Length: 532
Image (tube, rainbow, N blue to C red; front, side):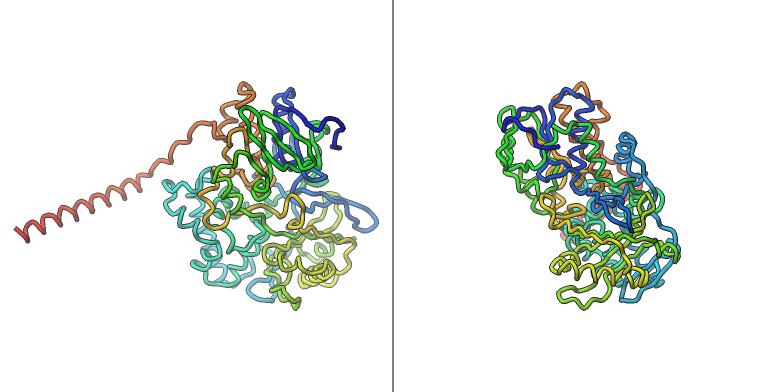
């Protein structure tokens, strides 16, 4: 993956902008379909993997690997599961046995061993009612076109409302709302006030529901981790594409579409011409590239209105998994707890999990997300570390302070990524989402996990989007190599039929028409008789 010596200009068939999991999946699929296609990946950073990053840490005299970026996968995620099988990578289950902790609705710590959180009876009813409401509404949302008001008459209304205002309208207990807040800060890296309800419903629906999205049990999104870490997926894809075809430290500055070719100009002076270009960068990063001609208004709007989240991921290693010995799962959900640190409303943490490696090396992983990440970012690393360990000790006891290694990754400070775990749409942005994110524009195609319809925001979404973008390119360059089934996920596939109206809705509509006609006829008869 070293920069090849040679000419400062290249002429290829396809350029992929972005060497993360989505962009590399695009290049891999194109290479697999036709090894004769000349495909170049331009990556701005000095490494591949995007929002996946595997590091080596000490756990007491030995080294092992942990993920500072995306790490969880599940059998409910078909695209990443298939790719792992192709690459021969194995997974191991997330440890969830034992007592779990909660710190919501105040500073007190409670614990539980069942699947039912340790909330008050009223808060449990409140939380379940909200989950039922979300599940009912999200089933009405078409993930491929969530703003389709003909299918979902409340789409515009829900898009104009934040998740926070939605919760305040229908929920009445503080601890139940904080439970959703803590999950949201980890899942999206933002506060509930920054997210469109319609986007949230689409995001939940793309994962198949609330349970698979937030839980770590069987057949959920946090079911398993990858032996050896997730960044190796990207590294293995590079080997299959060819190291010389992945150019690191080549940030793209401008993309010019001419009559029958695209000119890509990098900040280091390298110029590449191609027949097709796939852009696999987060929306706000795509918006920093100069496009000639300019991108359509929908694309410009979504890039302005879909920022990346704020997340700081922390990994703490130990010689012994003392929490397991004490009968604890390592799982914590908290609103942060009390803090005396100036400028921070609450403590840093929102979620903690057991992060023991596939080799049995003990570790805990913690997340600082949303407003907490913004506030705690201002402080010294040593002060954050002290606050994180202090918070953990409230749940697991003084053994927390015996850590061997400690590392944190603030994704908001990562060049050419600028946030994690994903981008989310602010209220009022969903009208631009489909055309803005997924649709091609002339010779440009768009990938990235944000553009996915199955587990968007996750590694699965990155793979699905990469496959879709590759199939769109093949439709133009090698149409004989792409099947109708592969095109079904693209704008070139068959038009999806409108959802049939149920008998109940037809009867309801007929009843409304009947009542309306009766009122009109009755009114006409009454006035004619009165004024005759």
